[in-house]
Image (cartoon, rainbow, N blue to C red; front, side):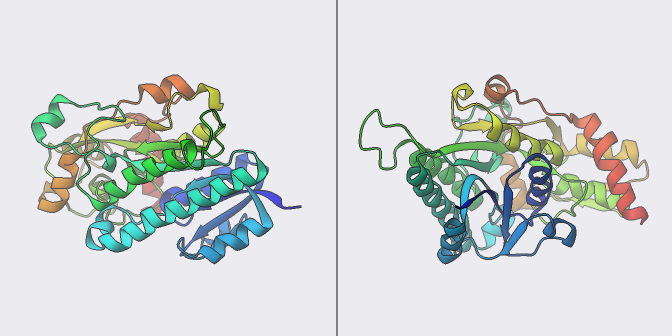
Length: 337
């Protein structure tokens, strides 16, 4: 008999590592993690980690021959800035990889007549505000509004959402009342901030970069204007949200795609929080045209009323608590060492 298991792709990334840790703590099923990179040794000892490519079909065939996959958290992706430099690779990984996993989940659901829960973290990049005037006039768009992304990553994520709905609601549904099998659930993340991983060039990383530079006593020039505004979320809330959504009763969910957010800040407001804790921080502004254009296309905030209503979404960290209790203490420790 195959052992029940949870599969986490993109496990070596900053969200992935935190998610692996949390799922292992809270879940009594076997955890299979996967990435093109190894996990840190302390995590690797807790799971069965597979170093492999999301596009390797034979790898997934081997997994399903041995395990009954009950949950899939699909985090593997080529992120926004990298995707702009390699759009074809981004499409192959972000769309091809997602479609391969959705196909696997649909087949497994049909085979055992029990739905695989497929959790797909999407992104604020799926939005595309066409002007600063419209961005100001529509500060909290709902899930279906302004879905006009201007980046390859945003296009990939929006298409991934659509593929999930197709495989969940329409794939091989020959009879009108035939029950759907694959249980696709999606959250749209805002900019994510981690206290434990170094920023790696993401489009929203100007905020975390300010903090890390200040903690090291280094000057920092923001690559966006001081009035640039988007929403953010602390990493513990990002991880908690997908687990909370996975555990929500299906009958409570009124949709399959949910905005989630925690707090919205301009770059100048972010800098003010940094300077509150690091008064000597030297922060200036030297906007990069291409990255600024992407930030300008993302909404100031997102309407997450549906998530709060349907499955009790309520972030633990607002801006003040995120800085004072999570970000600053842990980043200080990092550089004091």
